[in-house]
Image (cartoon, rainbow, N blue to C red; front, side, top):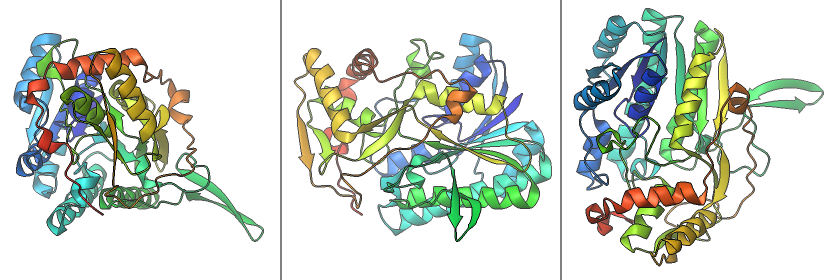
Length: 381
């Protein structure tokens, strides 16, 4: 099918474009390089330089024979959004086009305002554009498990049945975010649910856990096709950060008690989940929600895994507990459901020692690029 990827330059956006074309889909990507620009502004450049989108598309086509159409512009601008939709006429849209960092969203007022404006305006423009230009198109939106917070009950897959005074009703599972970024994701879900009810659009909202990894089936050893790999506190996910810290000889930065538990997945499983959702679309008038992760780990468990594998590779990894700069529960109950994507056919990749050692080996290749002053900045909230 014809699939438009919003945020196609990002950590997940570009690998998704390659993956979908490799599976026979016609893909276009859109980006305004917001992530790249924010990284430069905040001195948080990734581990290695990544080619621009036009060059990535040329490299991928030369390697695979698959073309990816590229649009560069700001999706907050209605005329540009309309131009992209009219030109490409998608049958499905994958929405990654958001400021993706919780710590960045908590930096200051300017960062908070940017996060709110970018994330909500792009989502709203997408909804209106689908209705006007592609009313049958399926929206696959990347949400986050962080929308749920850490409630003291089991987390259901998006919805919960409530019995109250002898009556029953099905509601969106209660959300309680722990950052402004996650709060904008809750607002996305609310916007989508409203317009699903009003206009009967079709939406799959993927509540994704933190992603780790760098290599996908499509990169196949070609470093120029790798996604961004951030190891800094602002834009790096926790396991990617720990691996870079281990390689650099920097103690692993465990926040507080380290009991914070989340659901994680390999980047290859993100690609699977998005493709499976696209190939089995939601119905018109349906907001379908999947919890997108494979395994749950505490921060301490991840640190111990990295230490064990790193020590086996001669890195002498140290773990250091630092004062937690975040307002969050450091020891809590966490039991989220995640059956929907498995039922669609997800074949998970698990965090084995072999997977972790391959990550370490890849990062070692770029060891000289690691700037240790970027590792921990202590952004507080």
